[in-house]
Length: 258
Ligand SMILES: Cc1cc2nc3c(=O)[nH]c(=O)nc-3n(C[C@H](O)[C@H](O)[C@H](O)COP(=O)(O)O)c2cc1C
Ligand code: SF4
Ligand code: SF4
Image 1 (cartoon, protein in one colour):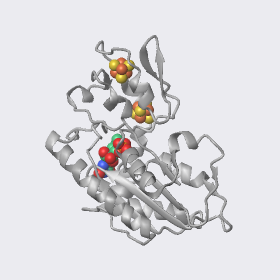
Image 2 (tube, protein in one colour):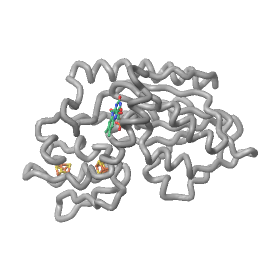
Image 3 (tube, protein in one colour):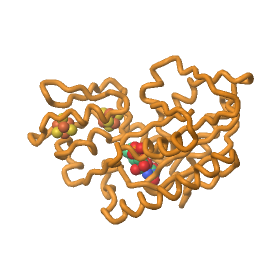
Image 4 (spheres, helix red, strand yellow):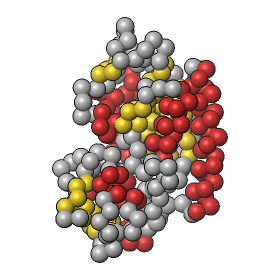
């Protein structure tokens, strides 16, 4: 069974490739977190979490879901546990944060993977989507990387190689908590330009159903459920969604298979 979270489709694509190859169920965390979070696992069935890296760690919604989730094996632990994260650049100490979350449940991690994919964060100065060439190159390499992940998962072997670059401790344990505070307010800065064609794709893209269509235009609930994934911004075919002024000159990216 694979639980995934995805704002702009990269992690969803990875999760789908794994679920299809490993012949297992795929469940969206954005919906599942509002249920009892209790699941049946067959003996030997793998349990996996697939998500994007946000500020060198897992999104808070993924950690909240892991705290809640229960499986019905004899000892309450999965037989084989992995996570796969997607990132634009590097993952910091995402593995340490995830291992701590699993340890709190008495679960042991068997494998973890990172897949570099097109960048989606655009809300700070000097951050933007990748050039077309870099985007395509990352997508081509991701196909091969996911095939290798599937080989390891199929054999139920162990792998812990993640894409970590400079100063991971500072990124994950100093910058990330501050960054997470800013993520909570992302939806209060959204607005819509006159280019909106009332297609509703932004509302459909939101993994936590935080966008409602009112009189043909998107309206953000601003009730604390936004996770700052930027899915609504990137999905708009007219670049009609803006976040403050910073996105006026930023690019967009959305995984084409979503
Ligand atoms: C809020 C936010 C924070 C991000 N932080 C990081 C980061 O710390 N490191 C990184 O390499 N990529 C970062 N990214 C890029 C995403 O991890 C990457 O593009 C990912 O593949 C998006 O996955 P998705 O399409 O499933 O949402 C961030 C993206 C967003 C929206
Ligand atoms: S409203 Fe928030 S959670 Fe929903 S798609 Fe937009 S940024 Fe993501
Ligand atoms: S995706 Fe863009 S064009 Fe479509 S309804 Fe949303 S804001 Fe309007």
